[in-house]
Image (cartoon, rainbow, N blue to C red; front, side, top):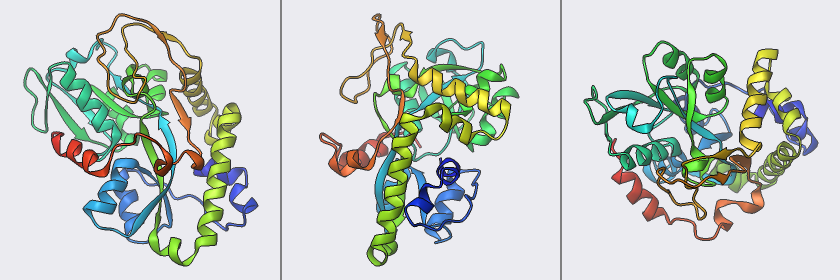
Length: 298
């Protein structure tokens, strides 16, 4: 979204001078660049922010949520169920990611165990992989699936090398995904600058919700990419009927073995600052989150 925001001139509108966006190929590279002070603001996986704050004791602070849901489990075309992932390898973007949580819950609910070694029957090997490498890995059959945010799921379908098996938002309704992280130093010593950045990001989120087609155009650099991104937008907002999925009403995981069809909306959406983590009711406490992470297979 940084490219889209700069293209619309929202940072400049709010009096913030910015450099051109820098692309990082993996989440590990991004968090290392941020913690080393090479960048001031990052769009980061929410579980990674917990690790940075409480695992690495870094002086950082989450200032806003960026979006909810918006990811999917994409698999090889011949795979039609979670159970068929037995003995196969699935890629995740990072261990500290909501994608890892959703995937491990899905696998456990279907009687599959997680491993980092060569998988046996009844096991699924999880492998950390940069999102930009996932589609190629699926095409070469190096992996049998991946779970990540768009547009990589739509890209796999557009290239005919994969298909979406489950949307993350259909497993865990309105789950958190990424957020904006800043340095405590900037917050303490440049509060006006921080507020201007947050104002620009918030306006960008509101604009994204109101102008989805325009956002797709801003994000795409080529006609083929625009077609893929438009496909992403349509899949998340056309509210198709899905059979065999129980969708959570309270942000909890539900089994995928249900038989009722439900209308699905808001599979992905931005969440402006006034609905930030600190203001959400019934949010999990930090100890509860860390206990859940400790229960995951690593």
